[in-house]
Amino acid sequence: RAAEGAPLPERASEDSGTRRKGASLEVVGLDMAYGDFKVLRGVNLKAEAGSITCVIGPSGSGKSTLLRCLNRLAEPAAGDIRLDGRSILRMKADLLRRRVGMVFQQFNLFPDHTAIGNVQLALRKVQGLPAAAARRIAEQRLAEVGLATRMRHRPIDLSGGQQQRVAIARALALEPELMLFDEVTSALDPELVKGVLNLMADLGRSGMTMVVVTHEMNFARRVADQVVFMDEGKVVEAGPPDAIFGNPRSPRLQRFLSEML
Ligand code: ADP
Ligand code: MG
Image 1 (cartoon, rainbow, N blue to C red):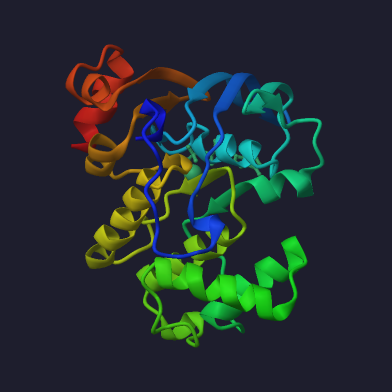
Image 2 (image 1 turned 30 degrees about the vertical axis):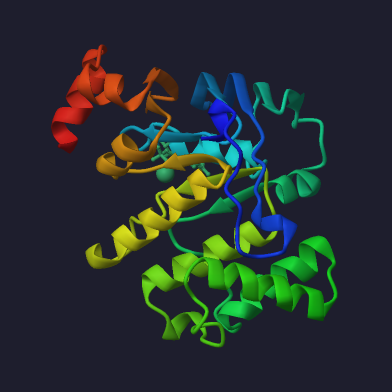
């Protein structure tokens, strides 16, 4: 793993974007509220460059809000978020969104565009690339996620798993330093879940820094470098998967796991 100083794997493509370099992430004392309702209450989190952090916890515990703060879709009331040691909170939100990619449960693809159109559009809008260059990169990214033969399909003609791969390819095309995944397999038919999880595991091995909100406990156990358990807007417990799943300390985590498994 990159975290251990190992070299990143070489890829077949000549494009430099496929050798990923994730940033380290540090969240310090993060508070966020909707009106009077405190959704995040002093969240602390550290993730090494190239590591995979899985965030678990009950519905309503603030997991999505945390991710939304990490790419500035939501603005925290207090605290700091640092990528490679530098605060992102004083950075312009649209600049920051080029460095942090996010994939959602509901894909959020443009229905009137083909798979390649969706990826191309992001490259043209966000990076201002000319059409030909955007097309070349989009083709590479879609091939990487296993969609070489589905590029001209519209979302409605793709399975849920394929649509989610397009969304992942679109985020990857912008070469983010940090990738956020919010329950990306929750809307998929059961037989499609495994393929998307395997793709995410591959991405993690390529040196990307990833924060993954998931209900897939087996994925977290197998793939995560650290697991973070949130409840009521706080990180209640964090540690390596063996400790979180094998030896949970807090009663709340013990209860959560007994209800999940
Ligand atoms: P999770 O992803 O863990 O289920 P969320 O971050 O989505 O949790 O939500 C945390 C809490 O914040 C929930 O109680 C939710 O109802 C509330 N919340 C989320 N979004 C909004 C919003 N836009 N306005 C008001 N309350 C919200
Ligand atoms: Mg959520």
